[in-house]
Image 1 (cartoon, rainbow, N blue to C red):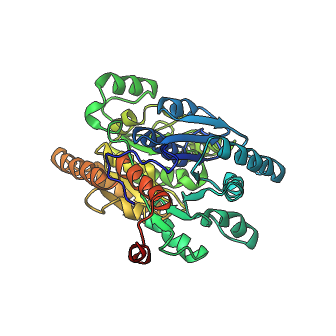
Image 2 (cartoon, rainbow, N blue to C red):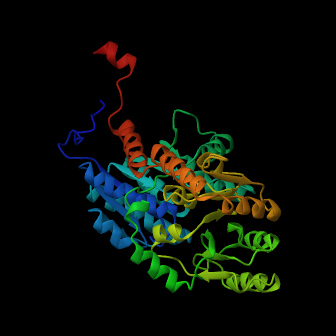
Image 3 (tube, rainbow, N blue to C red):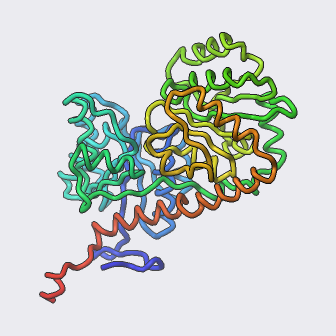
Length: 399
């Protein structure tokens, strides 16, 4: 049976469905944010929602959403720990009457898959990227994500990877793009005090155009290419921001050395992970995503557009699905600093009227295709496919 949007689904035992999402930790990232958003949506829909992980700074957001966090060492790749996790999950699944186990990352997915099979419960996975599959061992490790009764891909790019490499057919594969909280990423909700506070904290010079590359400080996010692109512009009237926490020790020093070599020290700021990204986007005149490897989706690209900011991104992966070239942003060849710089220059050259039209189109584009509500509703529909399937023609005839 299919339940309408205003009905809380009830299982034969007379209770609402129970979902357990599983991921390594709750530190930062797209998988974590998606799990939190869905946990809250499930509670709002009348379902019972659990999230299991090793914990982290975002753990309190699970409680705020009305869901329950279960702490297990799920970030571990140690086979013995993974086996113990599976046994513990079986006990939790049975005790809490879990109906659906939803794994969002590879290492904990092995424990989750084993536990779901042992307990006889539904198993769902989400591919958050096209994982590196070079070598038989790596491909085997990744393959657990293709074992879901439903396999969710966060973009068509990822879905093609899953279908082509792991043979997941349309009967199991569902493409559900990531969603943005349009109440948080709303330019009308960012007050002047938030902008001024962040501008002072980052020591932004008055009157300078701001070009920002957000994302973890790791090589594949394209920091070196961004620095080279700014160097090619030969402009001194801009301020460039690299916003994100260092992922690999020493990489920040490497970026600082590149900035120094280019003679750009006066133009650049490298700042730690920002807790007010809506305000950060509002400070930017251009937002850049220069990833050298394809993004599975590209959350930053969509968040920036939701805030009405023009985006310049490398032309591969999920960016091809989230940017409308010439309408909401620019796509440039990968690792082409000259092309990246030229697109940034083009974005900076827009006059006020062009920027306003760009902003309106970008905001409407995200609202129409990438809202948090749509992402959560479509994921719940996937759960309902498993718990409350449509009757088949054979079933209908027998009835």
